[in-house]
Amino acid sequence: MVRFILFFCCTIFFSSCSFNKLFLAPYKIPADAKYAKLPRKNGDTTKVYFNGEAHQPVFTKNGNDTIQTGYTIESVVFTSKSGNQLNGWFIKPKNGIVENTIIHFHGNAGNLLYQYAAMVPLVNKGFQIFMFDYSGFGFSEGKATRKNVLMDAHSALDYIKTREEVKGTKLVIYGQSLGGHLSAVVAKDRQTEIDALVIEGAFSSHHDVATYFVRRLVLIGSIARVVVRDGYSAKRSIKDYKKPLLVIHSTVDETVPFYMGKRIYKKAKSSTVKEFYQIDKCHICGPIYFTDEIAEKIRKLLQ
Image 1 (cartoon, rainbow, N blue to C red):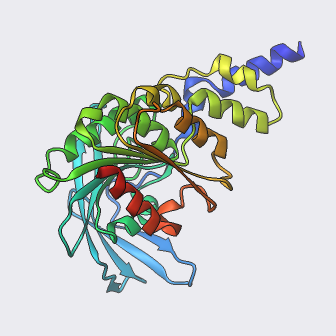
Image 2 (cartoon, rainbow, N blue to C red):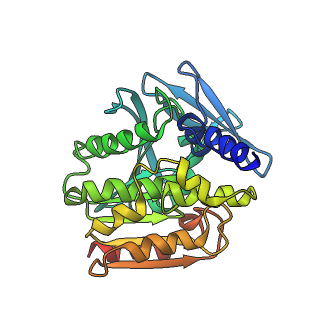
Image 3 (spheres, helix red, strand yellow):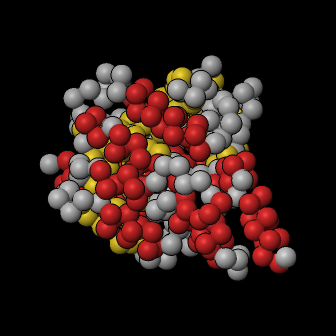
């Protein structure tokens, strides 16, 4: 009886709806929102105003002075294969010739307001970066589901390839956390259209991370493998990816265990130009603390 109840509870917990909620924690912004506030550690507040149908952001200090940066942000709206209108930011350095474009797949929580700062250090190193919110995140329409997230990622790649600023540049997919898992799947299917892949702080499969979470709840990990439908999988897809690869993972990652990053790396073809970069800071904090190293490693992948 105890086993039956345990199995029943896990089945409910890891049903399709519950599983989406477990992995996808979007911060939705109302379509008619005019501004948002971002608190800062120093006591100041960054107040972001949104203008026009594309929700163009204007960053201000305490709602007054516009914050000056070395880059520009162009907010765009594009249509996903999911049928939803998605919001994306194309962030470009103001100075210098851009040779490399990064399309970024972000993690499972927040939205562009909270995710963009993680990649700005690489913009300051000369990369132009396209970031976007999956369905149900930020200003993007629809529901946040694993199915929609995958379609959204493919659609974002379709969109960015139409931009004139991208033509003639090297194109890199950079995925973090859930986006890192997703990036391996998309890169495998679209590898003729990209030049390199960077995976940071990613889980190796839905099964693996479900088992990890269940064990942390002091339950039986094998049950998660039975009731969770894996669908697409990074460790399975990476076997068929043949372009240059950089896997980044922190030994002190408290969100996704270090061994999962190693697992993805080991599954990649040995003939692929690949590197594992071990760091020792927080979950998906690589570009913030190791900007120079990561920028140089990406450029080496593209040579």
